[in-house]
Image 1: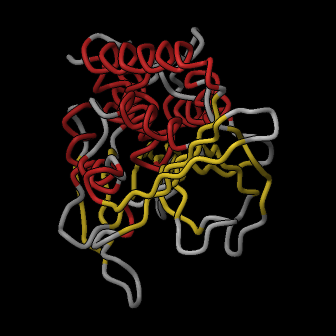
Image 2: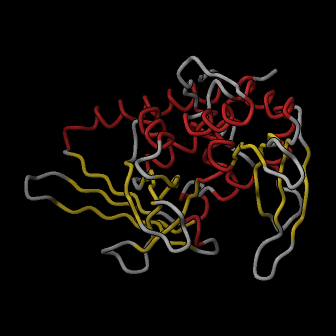
Image 3: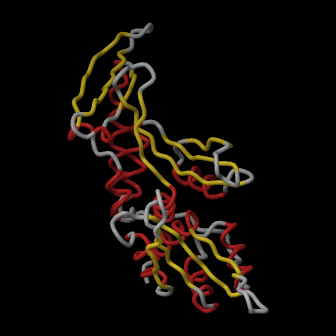
Length: 286
């Protein structure tokens, strides 16, 4: 059994899943149930099949068709044994809220703190993450890249605190009030191009097909790049690389870097560390 896949499944369940006792008419006791909903225009979402294969139980249903909504599919486990097995397999990485749900549904107990893993972050990103572009504040027609993971809660969600602690990049922002939401909205965000690139490299071995396809690629492969240098007030050279979209607007990005002329060795050292971290993430990262 691949523990990286189970860690991914735990992150995915932390983002989109729930477990509970389902009350049915005519029954004196509740029936344990665990479920994950996903919408998709191209048939059963790949992530639901992947989750079912990881835990080895449950079934996939759908589609449910409603006006002005994408077709809805779901993975569901509806027997006490299958719900308990799901919780046992992914519980080592689950955050506290979902552990409480499994305990209430099946009596399952968890004694160790959740384990952190980049595979777990990839699962959470597959459920609630996004990469996007927005207009640059000072350069009309240019775009900036952003990666984000959104969660709701009464206070800052544990999942976002774990993501921030593990990646050591980005910030947790909120709360926000969102129309139609039952709870306050919080968001982990990374808006520096290098931070987004590092995130995607670290998660790539476990990221699902849809989110990998949505992730912007290197600017040089799909955008027109304009470079210029400006002398700063202290004699430093400010280098900006601003990328504008050609045929693929989603892949545009803005990258800004300022470095004194004498700091070339420090910049080189940073690049070496970036490459080393990337190799470790792909080959043998926890």
